[in-house]
Amino acid sequence: MTSVDALLERASKALQEQNYKGRFTYEFGTTLETLEVVHIVREGVEYERITHLNGPEREFVRGGRDKNCVSTGGFLLRGGLINQMGGAVSLSQSYHFYIRGRDRIAGRDAEVVQAVPKDEYRYGMTLAVDRESGLPLMSLTTVSNKSAIERFQFTELEVGSEVEEEDISPTGTNHAKLDGKNLPCEKLPQAPSIWRAGWLPPGFVVSHVNSDSEGDVLTYTDGIASFTLFIKPLSDASSFKQGMARRGATTALMSIVSTTAHPLGVVLVGEVPFATAQQVVSSISPAAGGR
Amino acid sequence: MTLNSSDQLFESLSAMVDDEASELEIHRILRSMEQRPELMERWRRYHMIGAVMRGEYLATASETEKLAASVSGSITGLTEETTSVETRKDPSYSATKISGFKDLVSKSAIAASFAATLVMGFHYLGSSKENGVAPQIAGQPNTPAAAEPVAVVAQAPIGFELPLPEARTVGLTTGSFQSQANEVRVPMPAYVDDITDYATQEMLNRLLIQHAERASVHGSLGIMPFARVHKMQVDHQPR
Image (tube, rainbow over all chains, first blue to last red; front, top):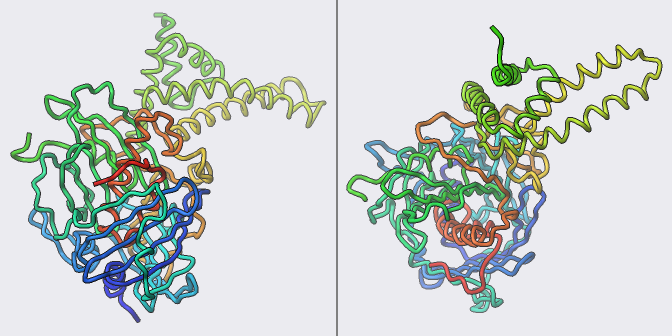
């Protein structure tokens, strides 16, 4: 029987190293969307394209990431341990894992693994991994360990087939080109952060730090779930809209936090429960040596 | 010593929080709340204390006002419906019994309706599009991932007792709020697709794309998190 560790490591590697092309559905509530994905590796570099097939035209084309680049999340998913605050963080600290037997998805045999959160700060996940290629064929984000709030599921998938140049070129005018070279390629981010979350759910580590027009941007992950904080000092707090919104498993919390002379406009976007988002946002403060 | 009208209202309010107010008191409080914002504030404080004690989530003043208005609106309809149903069912029923039963049903229903509306207010998220929110609230404890005791799950032997997730995707209730020093208030719960303010919508879309870009390298789904991006500007070039 395949071990959970081996399955997750295989899935993480397959997503980066395999050539594949397929269609999958994204479902939440009563919404069902269909998408097409293409992923190839050429001379050690990843190229990928994801296209929404219904609703407004949307397409993302990304290239340039080294296929051997392992992010913080990828490292955790592959069973790695990360030192943080004098302690070691691993995926098994955050979830219990159970092998759930086999299933058949998109005409392919899959091994099903269920991740049950050890606390209320994150959602659960059930992943069906293709027995042949190691690619995830289905992912359910679950709450209360029973109900799915979001599902990705392939309906067709070709693995290892020849992919033409046009398969990774934009198909329409409404597309965004993303530079994969910008993505983090180390276990922990090198850039210092100006702000810090004083409280994090156990098992989450900072995985990406940078500054741009949205302010200081910090991403945290536990290897399965992730959330991103956008933090910007506000000169006019009245213009900042506070509130929250949700779509599928994604929570967006917009809030003003007063920790310094200037109030901060903080937006958290991520696949975590609202209570977690609220607790993280309320704990934002300047990092040691920061502003 | 006699109580002035404010004291009486506050006492009634306190009774209402404890579910001990009469129907008359509830009506009077709801009417008074329209003219006296301090009542609303006091109700909010009372409820907040109760919610914290129970480990539940807190509402903001603006949410509570909307809820009170919706409850006020529902009371008339509720009373009328109760009367007509009883009369239709048993025309010979004595006026006293009808009145007594109506009072009982009506009072309980108003209290329940008020409480339920508050809960719905807290958990408004996605209610317009994600079916299943209300039943989930009614049938489950007010906790998200911890709606089932994690300890029990953790002790389940591998492969047993732990149900596989239901295949149908459902709406989501928000989680319990843990008391903390810097409470974050969120006056505008909404469904992403329902945000009508253009600037906020645009900002959220930009941030969703940025987050999807990061989530796609830190999770177990590859580039699939981009499926979560709902809208995109033609000329937008995320870095």
